[in-house]
Length: 292
Image (cartoon, rainbow, N blue to C red; front, side):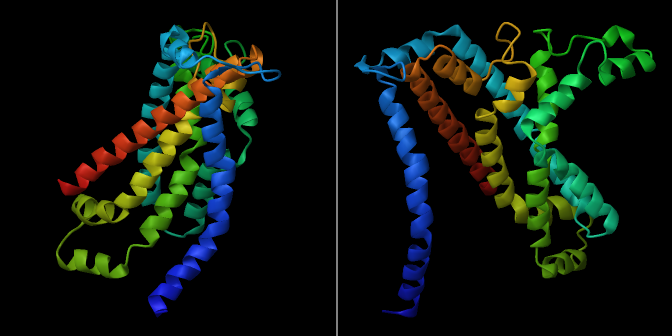
């Protein structure tokens, strides 16, 4: 056996336990969930095979489409909010001074907090009577802008985007800082010799070298947005009148509130399919960007 073959065999053996765990706890539950989507099942007792009836009901339910629309808003807000903000902060905070380290820690801190705690904090911020947001609007003479931020169906979904973006900037900041620190110093020296400074260096040297990290961040952002649940559930519970209902909360309510486990399994399968389509589409578009 050659040295290269031994290396590959060693890597395969090292990855095997993680692969087995992934198949056992991720792939098999997904297949099992898709299977139960073909049954009318209450969680206990016998399951009755009903074919594609659950999946047909999903696409006919207007609340599902409302949830999907809301989730797309969250995906857009996350991809065009969390990733760019984290990248800009990473470019500003890439140095390892004490001030930069402190700011990085402060930005990452919301990720350490429980989503329940974050939801409670922002619930108080948005509170129509004692919330700091309406208080500040009053203080700067914009009292006419005061709203019931989480109770008004016209603004509640947009109000929730702010804490979602704020909560998850930290992980992407750390990823981008790590990517920037991995850029070889020779590239910076070559850029200086060629006279590339400022924005020219940013778009011609820095961003192309961290582009793969940006693509990974977008994948994580999309998948994380489509399974968003706890923050929304704590702050609004999907209301008022389903105006903040997301796919995950829609699946949860149908599964655990009215005990339609078969229907909930169908919804979760549809969520996985939508997630795969969005991730594949985003990677295709960003791969096209590589060739332009």
